[in-house]
Length: 168
Image (cartoon, rainbow, N blue to C red; front, side):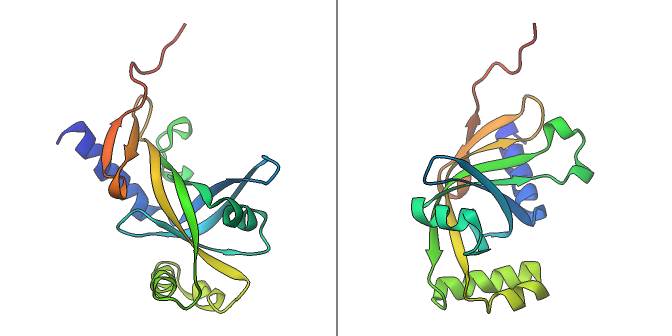
């Protein structure tokens, strides 16, 4: 199997294994914000997160319409903590209107993936279901294995930079 095909297969394995995403956003004053949320990723690589309006990042993601998402390999299974497999994606963010078809579909997928807690949380009206549409991302599969992923469903892939790591 070609290197890029193999990398896309590894990306799929990572996406299926990870159940939460690290969210990055920027405040109205330009300050970075970071949090996490349970996630469901659909076949188009859109991430769905159901987050409280009380959280700092919720209003900032809503305001800017942008977020960064990281799906990262669990520390307990990583071969090396310095080279955990991860997918970081720049996204356009939108709130799905409560009780719309897209919201109902997203909530059902979140319930299936995250179980009983999600069944309770879906009734909380101070939570919003965000759909984070991927623009472009970085896939890191180890030392010297960094790729740019882009295009529909992030299925196009290329090298990052080139030339690998350098030492003194």
